[in-house]
Length: 363
Ligand code: NAD
Image 1 (cartoon, rainbow, N blue to C red):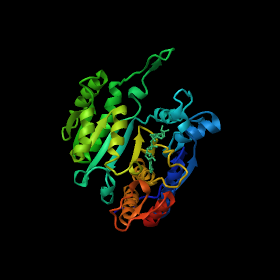
Image 2: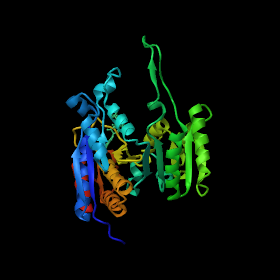
Image 3: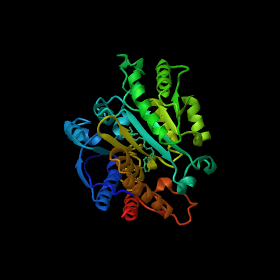
Image 4: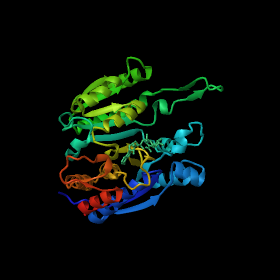
């Protein structure tokens, strides 16, 4: 195998809120271990976003963070969110505005979420092992359009509110191309999920995907309504290879699919566009377990693997990280969210215990 060139990369680390900084710390430690092992130079900077940033500066995405983000080769992000805002939807300045804005500012229009179960976690899922075994799905969720970014309105007297669900053909086209390209490297099937029987924006989505599909005759393209997709994911997840879907549907379906991977604490994602990519776990700030030292850091560590693979084209390094996760699970180490009594040699660890094992196997 050709030896990888030593490279220099700037990485912005944004821990965020709740368990964000707790798990991201281990993502960074893994990057440091990779740099040492392979002789790369990773230069780290830290940035604030979310509730932590509002507390410090009044702004959920301070200019300092945004300008550091623009100068970085990749961003490792944790999670944002605080119960204060969830309990008071009327608050105008909110943590999630930071995340939505950084996605928009950096043009991160495609969110990739690989859903693959480590064999050791078959028993940790609430789905039957025989249904799950071998499931391997790659979601492409559109990230900068849809009802999240459409015009928002509400009546002065609070009697009605609306969010505009809107897509432009170019937004569908650019993510569809990425998804078809990825399907080409996999099992060559792509399922586009929409609600074209009811929604005009979904009819535009479907027509655009059908048009792009003509450029990829080697990829089998199918279409499924989102309600059916929600059911099929649990009934027979192995039928899917690449799933392409819009922002709102993708948000919901990928959380549902996290059960295929055993836990929210296991799922990584990459948000990419034409510039700097952002790599993050799919889970939130988990205020119910924040500060307890029990959060699973594997989603952050697997996000680092995606950064190495997609952002830096470091295939060997990415595989080494995934292998370390596999070996740690095989050795029986479990955080509470993936614990199961069926693993004979299973050892309960907290965030730091899990992180240390990954570093040990990696080194
Ligand atoms: P959540 O993902 O934070 O938590 C859902 C459940 O999963 C909780 O029981 C939590 O303890 C558990 N969990 C999540 N990550 C875990 C991990 N690494 N290890 C072990 N268990 C884990 O979702 P939520 O409770 O709906 O939201 C909490 C806050 O996070 C809210 O303020 C929400 O707005 C925010 N949020 C942020 C993001 C993001 O930053 N990308 C995503 C979703 C939610």
